[in-house]
Length: 196
Image 1 (cartoon, helix red, strand yellow):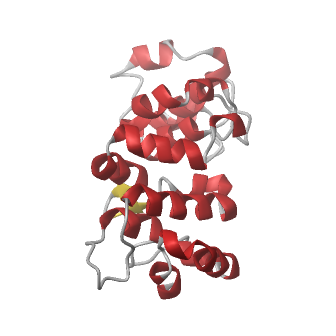
Image 2 (spheres, rainbow, N blue to C red):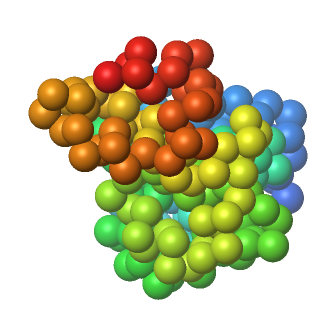
Image 3 (tube, one colour):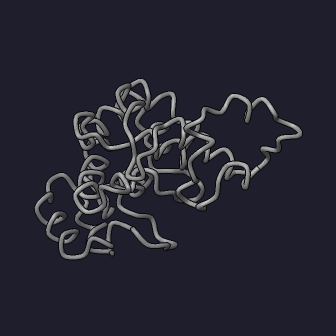
């Protein structure tokens, strides 16, 4: 894990690629108290003596995200992995600004690749959906690996978070489409009326 962090530097791209190819888990896939490279790229203090790289943060963020996409495309390169309660995407928006962060994200996750980025945002970072949607407008119409549209993912995510009771929020259920009501939640295997 330390080798990946120490080689996270735009001048060491080949070394970083070799280490992460040799051990993809060094990108921080498991639960750990340590920051993953994508978080180190955005959060660590930069000095000439530090193991973290010098140069524009978006370069290191892009390096970590690109490696993540190579090994974990189903998790969108760990873009929504959390450290201390914040996803890497949210931290990138705060540190780099939305425009620079999204430019880097679009370079690593091109809109033409049909990755369901909005599905992930709805589930793991709902506060970022509007910003991401501005840069990935076609993702609204994509289906995820379960065949669900973003509206279905949003519906089930809200149900899973709790607090949706028919007695208190009948309108939420009344506005549900037939497609949302007639399909099972992919995570729980339950129908909406079973989750309410």
